[in-house]
Length: 252
Image (cartoon, rainbow, N blue to C red; front, side, top):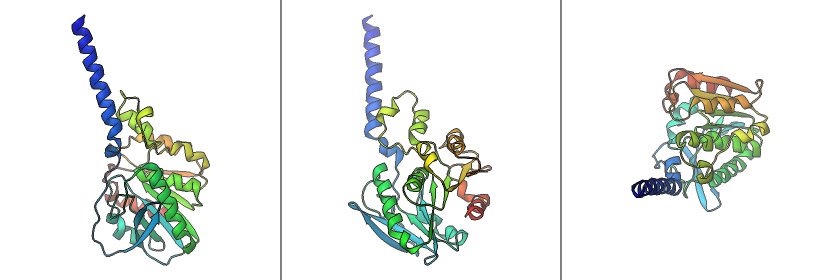
């Protein structure tokens, strides 16, 4: 009996230690800040709270604008050349999250949301319409912006219903609901979004299971959302497909 109790104690102790480590280091699993890269594109700095966000500007001077929020480990400058041609008639703003690409501060859900509003408010006076594109982590930022500001069109690339639900799938043995600091709950915002929505999914997405993407897409009305699945693509290889850029161009 004593051996059994000792073993049970060790198992419980190990479980609690693992849960504690998951709680303490969870943002290291969610955010992977990218370094600042040299590039020839125009850049503006937008201050908010105690941070400065570095934003890359493409096709300056157009009446319509598009704000892009990338993935959790994405160097957004990698999109610049292709986006400048795909969205040739639109001014594009590629937002480096706080802590990413030369932006100061550390990424958190509330901080990134606040920065998204600040970027919108800074650029809106120069444009008649503003659309938003969010990829992976950025899809949650895009839905947040869409319910708090006027957005013409929304593109959600490899989106999730919520980070909480994805984390529950990946860590089923832990009480994630009580551990998670950053939820990015897009699903709860769907009914508040009135804009036309394009959802782009990767057929072989190993990061965001298709079930989470479909659950989000299905919450929109059929006449509001278009779901495009890029065949043979993975979560990170999606942008290697010509179908991906064609879907973006056709929708915008």
